[in-house]
Length: 116
Image (tube, rainbow, N blue to C red; front, side, top):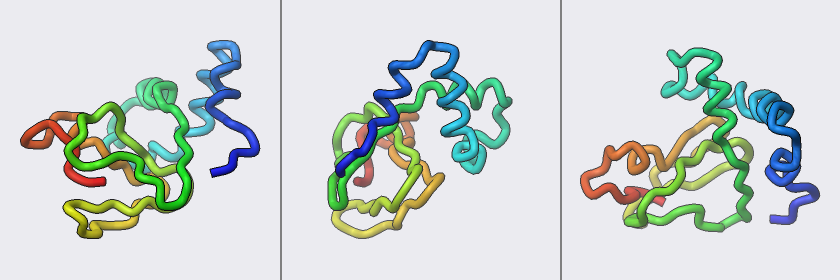
C-alpha cells in the first residue's frame, strides 16, 4: 500500500493533549457502532480511541494468521478484509467490523487465533 501520508506518524508527533483529541475525532464515530462499546461511557470510549493505532495493508496482505498468539485486535476503518478459517471463507469485514477479539479476550480454547 502506498501512503501519501502516515496518519499514525502524524498523530504520534502531536502534543499529548492534541493527539488525544485527534484520535477521538478520528475513531469515535467508528467504535460507536460496535456492540462491545455500546454501553460504555463516552470518556471510556475516548480512552479506547486513544489506544488505537492505524495499520494499513495492501490488497491480499495477511494481517494475522490462525494459531498465532494474539497481540492486537482489529477494527476495519476503510476497505474490506476477507476473514477465513481453515481455508474456508467466513465473511468480508467492512467498516466498523472487529476481528481478532476472541483470542485477545481469552475466548478461544487454546488462546490462539481462530481465523485469518
